[in-house]
Amino acid sequence: MNGIDRTYLSTIFEADDLEEIIAEGVADICSQLNELQRAATREDATAVGDIAHRIKGVAAQLGAARVQAAAIALEEAARDQRPSFGPLVSSLGEAIDGLCEA
Amino acid sequence: MNVFVIDDAPVNVRTYEKILSAVENARIQTYTDPVVALRQCELGDPDLIVVDYRMPEMNGVEFITRFRTLPGKKEVPIVMLTAEREVSIRRSAIELGANDFLNKPADPIEFVARVRNLLALRDGQKQLSRRAEWLADEVQKATEMIVRREQETIHRLTRASEFRDNETGMHIVRMGRYSAILARSLGLSEDEQHLLQLASPMHDIGKVATPDHILLKRGKLNPDEWFIMQQHAVAGYEILRDSESPLLQRAAEIAFTHHEKWDGTGYPRHLAGNDIPVSGRICAVADVFDALTSKRPYKPAWPIEQALVHIHGARGTHFDPKVVDAFEDVVPEIRDVRTTLDDRFEVPA
Image (cartoon, rainbow over the protein chains, first blue to last red):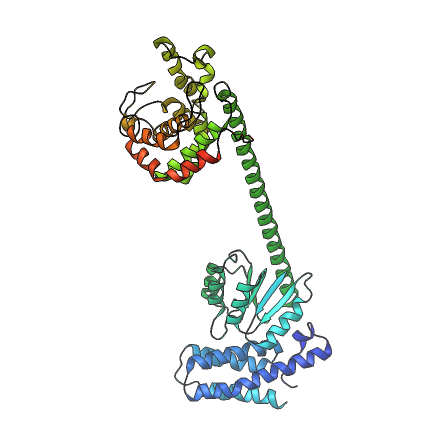
């Protein structure tokens, strides 16, 4: 899969388990995307922040740096209650799409 | 040892489980729902908690707060995993009982080392706790043995003194029972009831100082003999006084005052009313009742009913009215003691 740095997880898992855990993590992140978009549509900053945090944590674990960076930016915006975090949701969505499609 | 890992992301939980599989003797239990985890903590016996900070429904700080209120969980070590760098979050977590932090994603070597160290700490806590329990248990056993031996020694010495003018040791056993029953009926504490049960049998220990020709005289004592006889209360006090033992202190008080009378006509100090310690007022009733209902060389045993009439008649003169009232409230128990602990049935020491 593209966008994933296996350095961290490969110190923990054997090759077979490594691919399985990455697939599981990617599926987890992808499954959060719909929920994130719904929260953004209803402008629920708290929910957006929580989901971004969850995505950030899993992305950090997977070594998905682009997703992690986009999630951090969105989480901070949501926590700060900035008026418009729509572009940041889009940016994170694109990063996740890249991961899910890979 | 049981390590509970709580993180809402399954991939994280699986990663931590794999990392911690390197820790010897650690049974890893993982949870993605902190509410379920807390319930399992209550039911189970975690030795270490590894908890994520930000989770839906309950964050890590809330989890720690609630965990610490569970019985027996105050000292279980907790590691918080967090991507948060905020000092305020870490301060809250520490104040509420977290022992350590790890940044996410957790470095496997650091993670394993921390968990090993905290499990060693927990093992030390448990060993110390078991040792403390064992020591407390041993101290209690030793204390109980000392108390039993003290009581046995007192009982045997008291019996020795009673043997001079009583055929059996049952009088002192009954005295103890009567006194405890009366103390309870008067509303005295359980400790005081127990103390009186053990102390009252020593009431006549001063008779060891009374010459045989007076103590065992069948006829009426002349005034000089009567004066010497009365001195047994003083001798008992002298024998028992100034002890550090609360039991012997109470016994000294009883020995000195159990022949005083409510109206001030008793001996040896002619105390009256509430100047007579309650222990002495209780033992006065118990001693007279037992003497009346016991056979003596100079008289037969009175029937219990006749003794009850005598006690009632001396209410407010010889005896404290309140003690007589308390006595009359528990006559069935008194009667039961008199019947089951009759002089015909010698009891072992």
